[in-house]
Length: 175
Image (tube, rainbow, N blue to C red; front, side, top):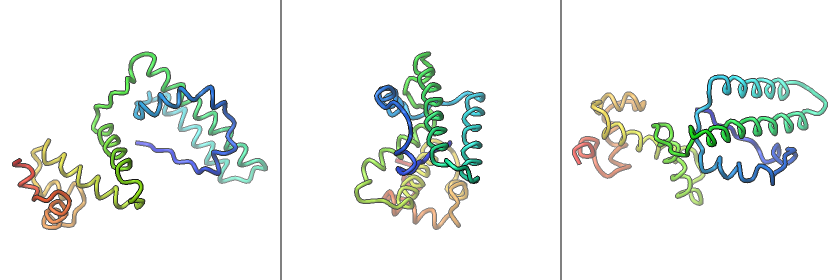
């Protein structure tokens, strides 16, 4: 999964007709996960490669160049998404495991954003949710789950899980 983060300082000078793309932006927010075709990924990757060259270089109008490039990139991706939504292949229903994880992350952020600003808080919550998912939907042993989630040992996994859910992994699996 690729996530794009942009600083407010970079966004301010972007040249775009916000009125024109406002409705499309709302549509994207309601459909945050749409799989790109391989050729679309290649084209988008070209933008990032060019942006990397601009940022690493010393062009005279570096910020303007990046601003225009990113504006173009967002129009490009917006077109991909609009096409997907109009042809019915991106209907906003996210039923992949990644989609469910993304939605669960957004719910965590919405619920806790005013008090929790550390990435570690959200990572801990995500690991606990992933452990719950693996216990409920796989036949993996607790030892295998502990290894998959990079716990140092099964005992630490038990303690971690119990501190986050109030029950041991085996108790959770049996409920």
